[in-house]
Length: 182
Image (cartoon, rainbow, N blue to C red):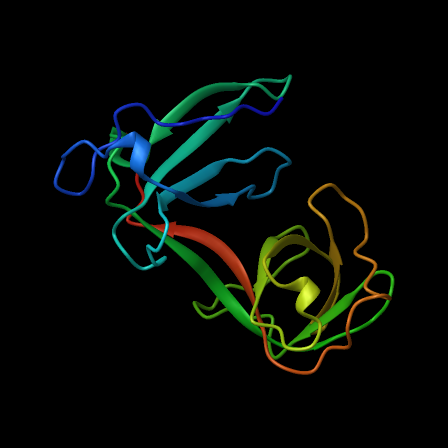
């Protein structure tokens, strides 16, 4: 069950109320290994991911998929935490196929962690097959440095009608920085 959620009485980094009628939202979300959104991060439009200007929360769900609890980073609704696009691997190829198969330069991510089947990734910066950019996918059928893309709903990504891959791109394993819960 989806819910529209707007934080009550949000505060900026100086602990001043943010006027609710004058802002436009930017949002990031992470499903981690599940089908429900676990983490959400909100900021005013124009804020960079590296700005300490994000309201980050974590949702807990019941067996029916309803939100039963929302916790804020450090227990408060402040816009002072940073969303980080996460660990990444450089993309070197992507096929026009069903399912789309992506090759990375190494399955060892920037911090030394190894990419695995079931990881939820975010793709950005691809040239040519730009249809992949800005979306979350699940890694499947990992073989060497190549893997298939599956949607977070479990369907293969059919890229047969996509523009041909030209170059570039990163596959991110999203996570949050400055992020703790009490």
